[in-house]
Each structure stands twice: as structure tokens, then as C-alpha cells.
Image 1 (cartoon, rainbow, N blue to C red):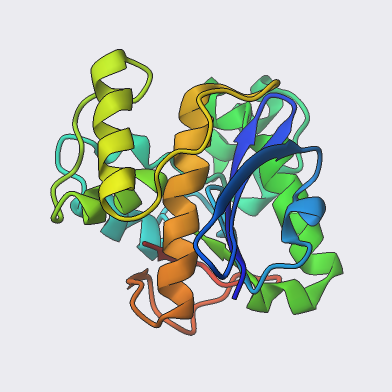
Image 2: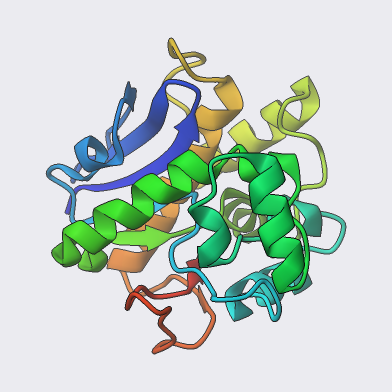
Length: 224
């Protein structure tokens, strides 16, 4: 099976594909639809499924934060579906606050990518069998014996530590840089590519109830 991992970057998506012989290929594509082509499973570092109000949060997020002591902030709060339609931070923050709790700018800047994933899975329902939500820091924690990697991936020591973990598990980083992407985006794509492989092997861990769905029928689970 050919599997892949995807992480958003400033020009689109970094995609790491793992061929059946274990060969890794990392590249940048413009759309997530392109990233899905030819894959059995694609694990993506972006929320899938949205609650109607910001509180309570998705169960999978709550469980993820509990597994990440010292690194819980890496699990961004997912916006509620009504706020996702907003086009300015002020509008999204005001609406979300009215429904329970506001939205920070970092989360708002991810809205276009969130909407892209959401639109893709709603317009092409068959992709729900292929595209899974994953989280790179949970993936690195699993590679690290269940202990979160506390070093910062954008710093030299954090980057090197994650490269060592990937190599130790058969996912040595094939490139140090790609046009349009930060090098930590590449690491994240490779990390969730490993999650995709674990999903095909029935070895991945699922957070959130198996049958939980949002109002549009999308699952709300995080895999690692």
C-alpha cells in the first residue's frame, strides 16, 4: 500500500508519500486533493469534523492534550463550525465568544486549510475512507516511547531530535528543504505519514469515540 502524510505550508501542502518498498518522497502540492491521488491512506495534520459550539471541545482534542504534558499547547483548539465560515478574525472571534469562548489569531490563520479539508471531504465522501486526522507531536511522542518531545522543532536541537526519531523508525527525512515550505513542515508530514502506515497495519491509536460524527457526518478522531 502507498500511504502519505500531509501538513499545511504557506504555498499549499507538504506531502510525504511512502511507497510499498519503504521509499519516501516529499514534495509540495497546491491542494489536498492532489495529495490524495494514488494513496490508500492519507494522514493530515488538520482538524476533521467541527462541533456546533466551542464548548465542550471535541473529545479527541481533550484526550490528546492529556497525553501531551508539557506540550498540550501544540493541540490547537478547533473552532466551532459557525465560526469557520467567518472571513475576518474579529468576526470569528466575536461569534465564537458569543457561543462560549473566543478564537486566537493563530487558529484563525488556519481557517483556509480547515475549510479546504472540510469542503473536500464533504464534496467527495469516498475520501472519508482515505483521509484521517493526525497530529505530528502525538506521532513523535509515540516514537519517543510515549513521552512528548519537549524541544522546539524550529530550533536546531528540536529539529535534530525529531530527525533522529524518524530515522530510528524507518522514516529518515529525505530532504532538508522544499520551496514554499518550512523544514519543520516537512518533518510533520513525515511523522503523520508514519501514522498513515500504522493505520493500514491496524496499529494506530484512535482518540475520540469510534462512531462520533459532526453535523455534516464527518468523524471527529485524532490518530497516532
